[in-house]
Length: 138
Image 1 (cartoon, rainbow, N blue to C red):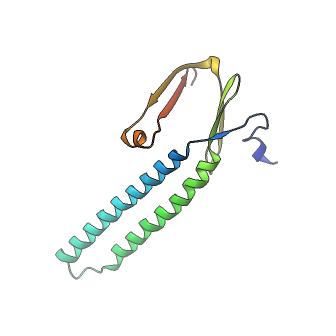
Image 2: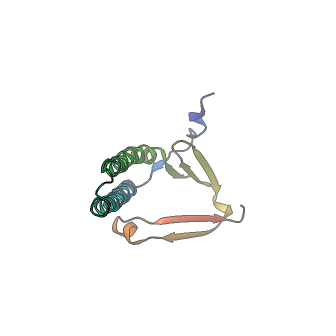
Image 3: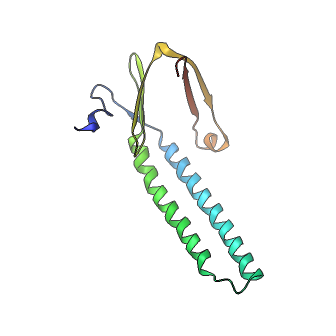
């Protein structure tokens, strides 16, 4: 069975999330990798000065693992961004998310009780906001 049609109904045209959302997620990944790299560098330097007999290669290996993690996440973010999206039809809000585990949600406008919009400092810098839609059901 082709499950691709289940997550992309023919009658619904999905819009991608804003490109700035991808830039924000990639910036966050770069900052996380830089922070982890800095912590690893400090720990390696302290270890080298306080215990010179301890081998240096575990710190380089850990730094390389962080670099590989950041590169894989960087590429995965683009694929996930292309897959996720939303659509506003005449009666429903459709939201499509997930890279490995895909989700498609359809929410009738009549069931929406509250909509919350929030934006942190980085989101405001990129012109983005988080929109949370709540219904009376679980």
